[in-house]
Image (cartoon, rainbow, N blue to C red):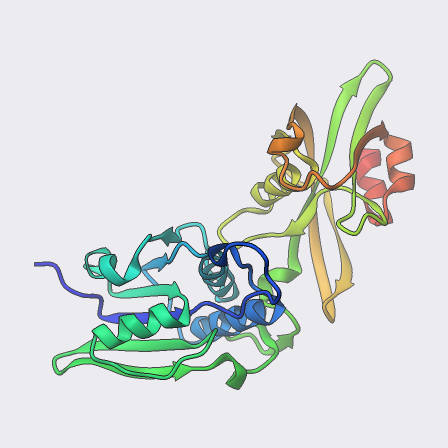
Length: 295
């Protein structure tokens, strides 16, 4: 016999961007909304509230809120499922799960808990923790992110150190894309997001991905290239950011495909092939120089 989830975590999507001219479902999170989701996720991680399933509405804010909350809790966000209408399809979808996370607008969350006989005033970013008992559905806790600490535990949910960003931010990977030519190996460098510097693809390692897998994703998104990533890193380096030290694993990637602009997620960036010695001199982070020399 199918049962309702023992625990329901209903999370209101974080605060959206102001002065948005696009369609409402496409409104992105603003910085405040991102931080709301991360603070809730860290709280969930500290209390061991790993969901067996995560469902969101089809709104951009709901999906982004779910992903940021899960990763801040130390979990993978790869399995998030979007549901076109949570208010109608939620009960069958959450059957046979012990704990389910549902993420939607505060109005949709209010409708969901009202249908379960629970009434609560809600605002963006708030988490409602419900539990199924013999007496019915009861509220365990209502967590408002503004009541949670602004700093995050490191290196895990129960870590003794506090940092400005969730713990996973400080574990990063990078890839040096190269190709072989008659004149020797060339390195692909790209413009930074601001356009002020030359860089190679580098980013935070998402929970659930290995450093090499994450580097491959960064190469596709930032440089618009695909290829074979080395099994072992060329090495590591550290640098300071967000009030602490980030550790970066660096991989080599032989490029096998260059994506056209319409398939390149960050096609606003510049990209150019240069000789290895030139790349080492042009890159903003000089720590990449020794790794380029290894190629």
